[in-house]
Length: 319
Ligand code: CO
Ligand code: CO
Ligand code: CO
Image (cartoon, rainbow, N blue to C red; front, top):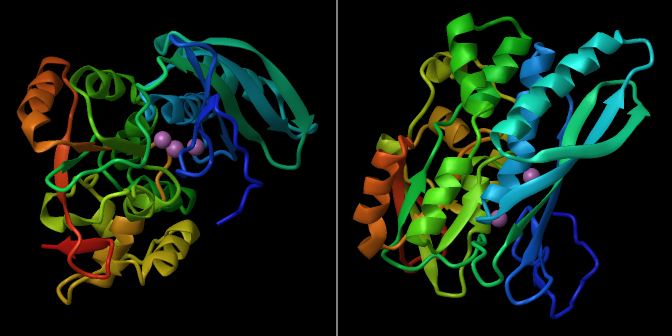
């Protein structure tokens, strides 16, 4: 992973050392800024959908910290020879999604680029000390995931025209869904750690959720929520390049157990776009957390546990 020059300042509550995707900077005792940026090339053909997915994805890094996004700036790469109405549609998708998040798009910057790219630099706030980082899971915690997996495999299949419209619709609806409600619930109940699941896949992001305690994570494959149709596509050999790179990078971190197949490994490592939150909830708060999710209509799945570390592997997969 890219090593950034070390930045140390008492006002910097979260920098790059915890592998979090948003930084947190303390202004005063009641307010800290949450700051993040994300951008990427189109993952779906529909420009409006691409805009709303990209916006949901950028906002997610604020939600994963427990912050409230307030303003955002457009980051746009656009080819000079492409019809400008496409960019208008992208920005309409962004604008509608930002409105849903109660976040104002206040400007931005566009450059001429061979391939379109879009993203947001988002600024939000949080009360200092309330931030939820990747680090802090405790033995006994439950791991909760708020969106099913498979969007990397599905969008790759869509690019090869190997997918039904229905399956793609399920995936795009999930990718454009904000992690706002899940974030509000975790802030209300109080949780130990959180990451959003994006390019490194479930296991790649789980690996970053290390702790100062000697812990290990256990994921139960039988419980994993996976978008309908995903297994079919894997059987057809459709695997994104990013997903394979995730798998290679993780191989020595994970105790796979001899029952886990290659295809199952691929799902566990599938590079997601605008995936759900992976939340580490203390056992004594689990019932309260589940009840709040029911009230707020938030889908969740318990996908694993946090244990005292007993082996060299930070992550074990069971089924
Ligand atoms: Co984070
Ligand atoms: Co990000
Ligand atoms: Co993130």
